[in-house]
Structures are given as structure tokens and as C-alpha cells.
Image (cartoon, rainbow, N blue to C red; front, side):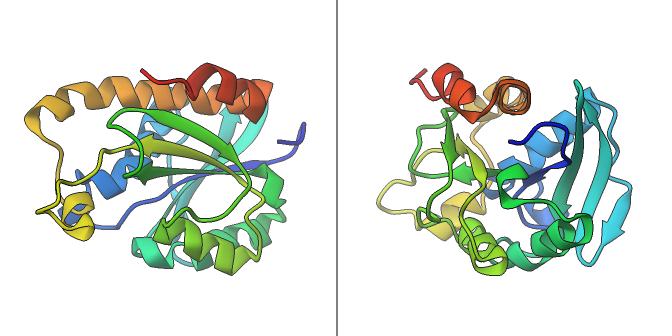
Length: 193
């Protein structure tokens, strides 16, 4: 992430109360945690994306949540990137990942979509995968439960008790990425729990 530039931090999720507490919306949950911790309200709207501008440490940031369904997240994010002339290298996407154990965090610089439709949509809209991702493990469904049903349903009672801690760790990972870089973030947060 380049120094003294505006950084876009966007969570991925689905809009609406029906989806607010689902595994797929853990990216939105982390953005809400950061918004509260740094007093950055998401009080602006631009072409299908809710966002707020503020400062985290000494970095100017935009926190955002696209109000399109997950697999259509790219165009609203592209609109914000274009409007503020943000470089891909100054974008951090926070999203769920079924390939990681519940609660595990993994930071990744650049790359493909890894099967995540929201990330696929962003890469398609911005024309590049050159952004940082913070992947948050939501676990994998058993063989009887389809992936779509799994990610669009809520957390178990036991998992709910851990969510606040996970969201706080994710917030700390975002701060580390902003202040020290993605490599430092990977060293501190990519290890297994």
C-alpha cells in the first residue's frame, strides 16, 4: 500500500437484514467493527456502495460496503475506485473464505479469485487482481450441506461467541496492513490458530 494515498477498505457481503448475520457477510461485519473503532460512519452513497471517509492512524481511508449481491460486488467497487482515482494496490478487500478453518485469517497480496464470486466480480470490473485481500475463515460445510446454503446461513451458537474476537483480530490485521504493509500482516496473522 502506497504512503499518503487514499486507501479503500471494502468488506464483501449481501445487502439486507436477511443476510446480515450470515457467514457470507463477515466482511461487512469487519467493516462495521472498524467503522465503530475509528468513528468512520458509512454515511455516503455512490452508485450502489455505502462508504465513509476517515483516518486510521495517519492513513486516509475509505471504508465501504457494496449494496449489490456478492457476485455483483465489482461494479460498485469500481465506481468508487474511479471516482476517487484509487490505485488497485491501494485497495484491501475483506471477505469470507470457506477454505479456511473458522476464525482463521489469511492475508494475500494480488492473485486470482480463489473460487470466491465476490472477488471474481471485482477482478472482472477493475481488470486486475492486484489488490490485497483479508480472507476470514468461516469453515467448510459438511457433505450434506451445499456451499450456497452454508454461507447464506448464520453461525452456530458456539461460533457466535467467537465472532467478536475474530472481528477484532481482523480489525488489527487491517491496521497492520495499513501501517506496516501486507508482508508484515502476513507474518503476524497468517499462522494457524
